[in-house]
Image (cartoon, rainbow, N blue to C red; front, side):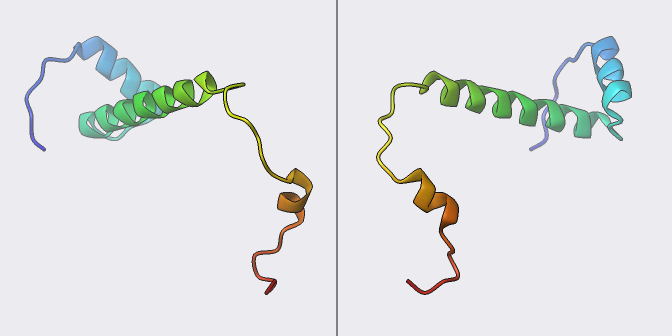
Length: 69
């Protein structure tokens, strides 16, 4: 999607230098991906202690998906 936005040039250039991004577009996309990843992690962490575990962890560790059970 093409869009026009005003971005702080100094922040963008510093981010490009720090990350090695090849273009402004790449940097903006990387930043958006990082925000999405960070927010998903926050949501997962908020579930800690709220979900009851029902399973056999040892069985999961040793399960061979290629073995015809």
